[in-house]
Length: 170
Image (cartoon, rainbow, N blue to C red; front, top):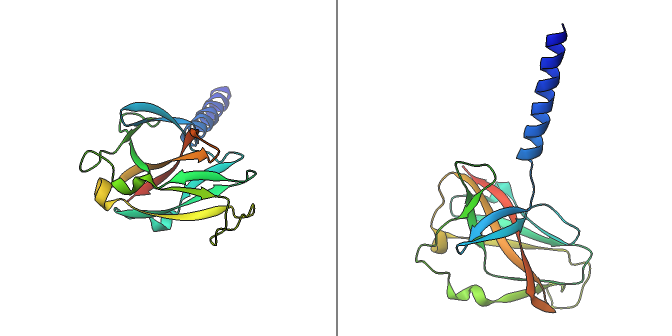
């Protein structure tokens, strides 16, 4: 009877550890442009990114960028896609670009904190970002991926950070 209780307790502890590590929400380290980059996955007090699972195909998805508690956030057209490494559940590596460099249209910067008509609006909290990566990465194979975007303070664009959202291509 005592061995049974110990086995149940051990199984519960193991299940808790697996849930905790599998539910890890960030930050994680992603190799982007050959450099190890911290990427926040979890919702924080200011800004976060999600991917609508119903929108995911091998060539596109819809992401939603949300902000709360801050007046503005800057983000550009640039994004990265990383794939979960097969040998470790915590490591991600950027999917290589088809032509070796990003597209020229990636220079545009959008400041979120204005409504769609351009008027200041602190309540404007989210924006939908359709992402079609066909011309940058090509179709993705089935697997676990991470969509990564850089967000900045419009007053200090050099103080940016990376945020990400996991998604699965079936």
